[in-house]
Image (cartoon, rainbow, N blue to C red):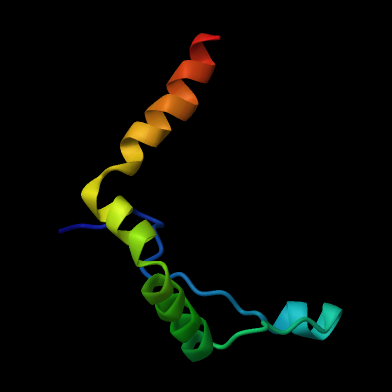
Length: 70
């Protein structure tokens, strides 16, 4: 498949500038962030089940469609 002209095949961010100019470093590494994310999902199984079942759609409808009518 031919790619669009000028389309980057790789996107990358060099965070060196924010470190140099502002001294900012991320609070989490990829590994610690992933671990915390997995732990959160495991600790919130009812929420996950509601998302997986699609039950949240009813809440969305009630919250947003009714407001747009008023």
